[in-house]
Image (cartoon, rainbow, N blue to C red; front, side):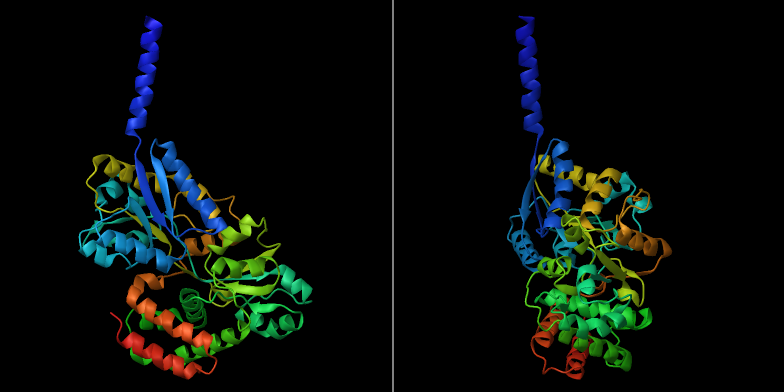
Length: 408
């Protein structure tokens, strides 16, 4: 009889545990090999808490954001979703659709551990915190294939100028100088990296921070558009669409380099390539070494179900736990948002990023400075610019000035 009671008690415990487990739909746009490996670290940690991560990945950030916003405004919220740090969620917060997680941030001491503090500031509206920052991503990198340069009989460049100078010989060797996906956000990103690397921070912030039209139309920015014109010629034969396909051209030695954010490291890691041996990385294009403090954050829609609210709380907490931060960011190629964890096992490229972070060589990400509407307008400009060589640098700059003039 006692044995039967014991079995019944054990069964009851299992049933109670199963009943307490809550499914939470999590939406994001991490679909490449490296990204999927990274997001699995979050999913595994959440599942280990007794809850269930229901993965809802949508390829492409712009497409994913459109679906997420439609779901939220249509009254069909998910449990949690990924946005970039910055102004993308402003209207959703104003509409009262996103959960205020200030209580979680305060209980977990996020203000004391999130570094730089601007990441948490980007989650804060009217003194209240609405998101959990999970990583620091910087656009300010060029990735260079050692195989491509070895095949061409050239040394690996150490800066943008040397990279440009290597283009003719790369082409003679049958290599694509610059791999670039044919999507507006990638082309806009390339321009912004050139902008940050080739002019002073003051010029960059005057245009994107202060929306200074005179400087946007001036000689410094004109030089950036000339560099973009050069990049267009170097990428003229690049026909791939997705960023990770462009990265693969570098990994396989078909292209000399790619200007892309540090999430590209996840693809190199999946291909078992070694930083400093198989590929090189130059922060700030080797010209102005700095990091833009962009990245990803998770927001939590307002829900009525108490069990799902509790699961949201659990997920928000674990995303910033030390062990989760290490596991996720090593796979993602990004830097952790915690300033108190050991990443001595990080590769050569991550170590460069960590050094710049410790030195404070930082620049706000454009997503923190521009509204999504302004970003979309700049993307459209560069889709046209890279598709049509007849559009001169001067013409493109004139259109850029108009965008900045009307930016909020």
